[in-house]
Structure formats: structure tokens, C-alpha cells
Amino acid sequence: MQFIDIAVASGYAALCLSLIVLMNPVAPREAAVEAGAQSALDSAISSYLEHVGLPFLATSSAAAICASAAEASNSTLVFDVVVQGEGCGSLAAPSSPLASSSLTLDLPSRSVEIEAWLARQ
Amino acid sequence: MARKAVAATLASVVLLTVLVVADATVMSAQDNLASSAQTSHLESRELLLEESLAGGVSLQVLAEVQGYLSSNPAECDGLPQYFASISASSSSSGEDSGIAYSANATAGEAPALQAVESDNLTVVAPFAGAVPGVLDLREALSVNEVGGGGSVSLEREETHTLNLPIEADSASSLCASTLASLGAALSRSPCNATMEQSAFVSVLPGLVADAAALRFTLAAGWVSGPGCSAAYWVTLVEPGVAGATGSFDWTVRGSGTTA
Image (cartoon, rainbow over all chains, first blue to last red; front, side, top):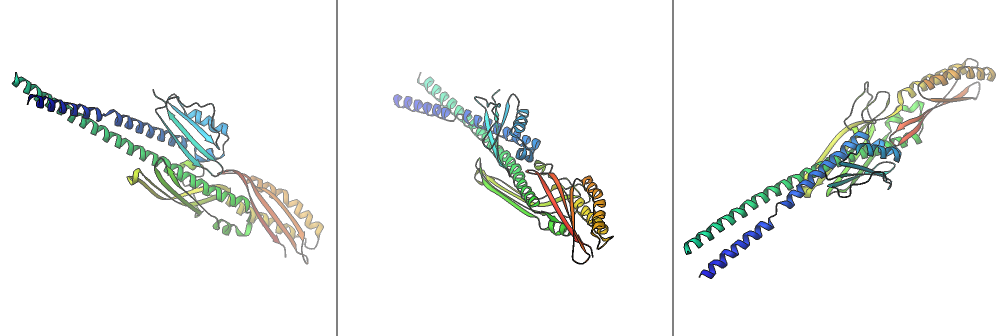
């Protein structure tokens, strides 16, 4: 009888500990942080689009577009603009970004892709 | 001793149960947070897509109108019909980050305006809004997006005003004044080609200067017609119009005959 009691109590303890390990709240928290970072990046791309305008991206030289991307970048946010497959070589993406996002624009005369990375602080 | 063991076991059961319930509560809260953040991300992505799609199809429409203007010279006596015949459309559809999207835009000539009219499609500035005297376009725009398995959707049906900065009103007034001046000059000395040429040459520099003042280049000529009539023509070119896909030239032609 005593042996059964000990077995049941140990089994229950093992079950509870397994549940605690399985229901790890860290994974959804990280997913929320990542989704928040993605939202911030999308807002940053939107602000960049509003600032330069689509006609600028449709007609300007690669050098002018790269200059605008560099101007919009800062220590935590990096922009790159790929025009007809050619990116701005001077803008290096963070080695281990918190989040990254891109937006492809089919403009009348060219295809433009805006890429953005959020660096870990 | 046995009582203590039972008490310790019960205490452990209660403690472990409380721990499991607490962990489940935290897990549930974090799940909700993750779900909200994911929904928020979908919404922000849809807003970004909406902005780029609305601007993209609008720019395509402007490019189509620009192509029409640059490859089809207008006639002085048919400018209203020329502008009324302008029609352009563009569409885009696809999928981005789990969001299915479609966008459509159609545009035609906008009613004449007396004042500058702003428009909130600022992503295509400076072609957003209406400017008196240039070609203004009224655009019907629709954008539809569905993401998250249908949980986050966006629908937009709007009318926008766009412009292409060709000097439509200036062209119309230059047509009228230039053709009237040439007709009057060539009518003064009918049946005398020498005097007609002299009158034509004397009036031409003023016409060229008037056109230049309105940012047009002007070329004109004339030939003797049947009887004592004279046929004359004029070509007005507005060079380097800043269009949505780069600069282009817009040409207007006119002609007339003296009796």
C-alpha cells in the first residue's frame, strides 16, 4: 500500500514537472517580440516610402536611391534598395538582425525591392 | 510518521498543482500577447502593402497616360476631345507574407478645376492632386487584402485626383492666338507670295517668343493653296515635361487656310 502511494505521488510530481517544462512561456514571448519588431520595420519602410515617394524610386539613379537609403538608416535600422537586381553595396545588413523585412515594388520602368533590418541592441 | 508523510505528500501535490496552474496562466497570457502581436503585424503589413499597391497602380496609370501623350500629338482644333479620350487602367494581384492582395485603378480626364486640389495619395507626389491649367485625372482606386486565413482583411474603394504637368490651357490659348496671327498675316496680301512670305517672316519671331514664354517651342510654315488661298501650319512642342517615368515631350499641331 505504501509503495502504491509513493508511486502515485511520484507520478503526479513527474506529470506536473513535465507540464511546467512543456508550457514554456518563453517561446510565445519571443514570437511576440519578433512580430513587434516586424511591425516596426514595416512602419519604417512605410515612412521611407512616404519620404522619398514612388516617382523618385521609379526615375532616380541607383546612386541617388542608395543615398536616400543611407540617409534613412541609423545605428539600429538599416535600409537597402535593390533596383533591377542591383543593391547598394555600401549598406551592410547586420550579421544577426532582430528582424528583417522587404517590400517589392513593380514600378512602370523597373522593379525595386526595399529591404530593412533591425539590429539587436 | 505516517501522518507527516501524508501531509508532506498533500503539500507537494498542492504546490505542484499551483505551479502548473500558474505556468498555464502565464503561458496563456503569453500566447494571447503573441497572437495580438501577430495580428498587429499583419495589420501593419497590410497597411504597408496598401500604400505601395495604391501608389504602384496609380503610377502605372500615370505612365500609361504619359505614353499616350508622348506618342500621340494633339490637334489644336480637337484638344477637348483629345483629353476626353484619355483613359488608362492598371491592376496588380499576388501574395505577400501570407496576405493575398489585388489592386485596380482606372483613370480619365478630371473635370476642369479653378484651384489647386490636394490629394492624400502622397506616395505619388508631386502627381497627387489637381493643378489648374495642366492635365488633371480622376482615378477610381480599389485595394483588397486578406491575411491570417481571413482574420485580417482590408478593403479600400476611393477616388483620387492625379495630374500630369503638361500645360494644357497654355497650349489651347497658344493654338488660338498663333493660328489667328498667321491667318491674319497671310490674308493681308492675297495672291502675292512675296508679300505673304514677308508678312509670315515678320510675325513669326513674336509667335515664337510668345510660345517660349509659356514653355513651348514653336515651328510654323505656309504654302500657297488653290486660287489665292494660303495654307499654314504650326507645331507646338512642350519639351521636357516631368512625367511619372521621366521627362517627355508633348506636341500640339494646328493648321488653317486663308480664303
